[in-house]
Amino acid sequence: MASAIIHIAVAKEINKELHMNEKELFLGTIAPDISKQIGESKVKSHFLTNKDSDLPNLEAFLDKYQSNLTNPFIMGYYIHLFTDYLWFKYFMPEITNSNDYIKLLNGNKIKCNKEELTKIIYNDYSNLNILLIEEYNLDLSLFYEDIEIPNIKFDEIPLDKLQIIVDQMGIIVENSKKGYTYSFNIDNVKSFIKLCTEIISNDIKTRLN
Image 1 (cartoon, helix red, strand yellow):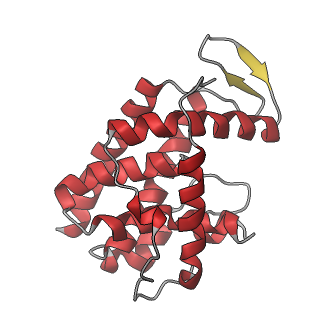
Image 2: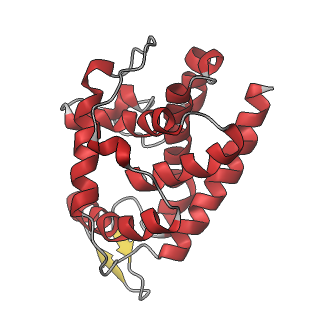
């Protein structure tokens, strides 16, 4: 999945047209990843077809929540799922092939298993976070304060546990550092964020009109 900071950057760019409450939007944007923090499968939280799939079923989400897209939390959640869909559909295939190898920035390919691939990717996330926070001027104060639980009905995650993912995000940001990345070029990530912004914004316009 795309990193939380990438998700938030996409949400901020899209919100330049939506003008929704930014903190509520950001909360929805990180909410799906609470499943990992509470030891549950991503299948339900990310609307996956099954445990072997990475692509969220966007239509399944929309069938249930499209009428609530004007709610910032719901909109943020949708942006997260759509970004993940684009990430696995278009971005990740450029650097890895079914977890058999990962392509490094120097063009070399190294064989790795899923655990090794995940370690490399999350190391890159950590090193890119600071650059992305600065590039997109992200206000992350949400992650250093108590949150207000959204007053909505949502079945896929426990809303009363959202503070867990917020606190974890604060730790991730604190531990981020500028450093060497192995596979993710910052310019490519920025291009991905721009692509997501364009595709998702156009989709949202058709659904809100």
